[in-house]
Amino acid sequence: MVNRNYILLVFTGLMLLSFIGSPLYPQKEVNKGIPIELSLRKETEHSIQKGLAWLEKRQGEDGSWSSYPAITALVVTAFLNSPFASDYSFTIERGVQYILDQVKPDGGIYGRDMPCYNTSICIMALLATGDAKYAEVIRRARDFLITLQADDEEGYTRRDRFYGGIGYGGDERPDMSNMQWALEALKKSEPYRVRSEATGKQKEFSGTQPGGEIEGSVGANANKELFWDKAIVFLERCQNLKKYNDQPESLDDGGFVYYPGYSQAGGLRSYGSMTYAGLKSFIYADVGKDDPRVQAAYKWIKNHFTLEENPPMGDQGLYYYYHTMAKALSIYGEDVLTDDKGIEHNWRSEFISKLIKIQNGDGSWVNSNGRWWENNKDLVTAYSILALEETLSVNK
Image 1: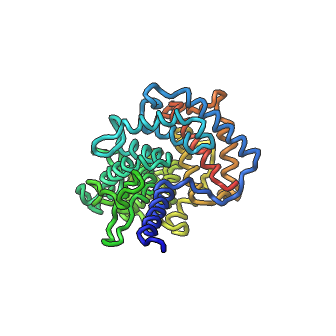
Image 2: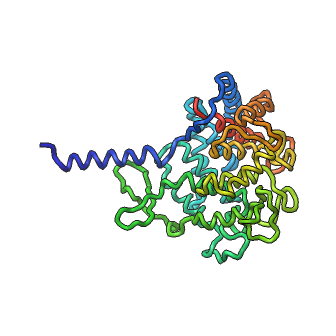
């Protein structure tokens, strides 16, 4: 007769391994869209490989790129998401260690400034490793991000135009850019929160090693969860859509601005990078694809689709635009866009061709317009590789 305790032990072990091996660090989702032609896929992989080889040579003695956590994390993620990650294991290990060296007592991962921006991107790099030994670091970083949301606990009320948003951190006002980084990091790290069968409350899973407590320990900030409904209030106020935006100065074209009442494109004009950021953020907030807010943003994108500029800002923030575009369109799940002239665009193929065309001979990319650090080759090359990797997320 089989010992019942033995069966229970085996079952518990299998359940724990299943939990650790699947949702804690989800693998990159495959978009079941139009397959990329084999020749173009190979050309894309070659472009990525050239970029990674260039970045490998740029790594500092401390393991960083540009001595900056977020840039290092973007580069590390680019290596990890590529088909060539195993060729760069030592480079990746050094980069990850630099990220870990930036962990602060409050759980954030940053250097001297911009704690939200840095922490969000560093979380995603550590998630991309697929290594459960970083679970506690990610959990605490996630808790830190949650404290940055402008809500009732920080003295905001729903009447405040910044209510529900997240900014750089500290006393700086929320904005759509920091918001989209934070929401992506928080959404992708949500599997850390598992529901206790006994209490129905949210718990944190440490996941540091098999055999540990399944529910793990609850961090100091765990009582404050990100309220997605509050986040949506801020997103609505950044969207030029009068039916949902309660701010009196809103326009009505469906696009997004930098923060309520202000656009980096001037006045209240919607612009490309923030509209892709808004679309992506609505999706992460589980706003349905058929929702009028999502459809209005997508309509703006279709009517302004271009790879020649960050509309209407020209080359300002162009590679941030590319990076955010690739992520947003990939998770939106439509491979063909029809613009306002009735022209159909297979965005993946057009996107790949554009980025390969503007890649430098040494494998890098750079923007001649240095606004928002885009004269930094490390940053822009990471953006470009990550964007190309998004295009390959379609089924082969």
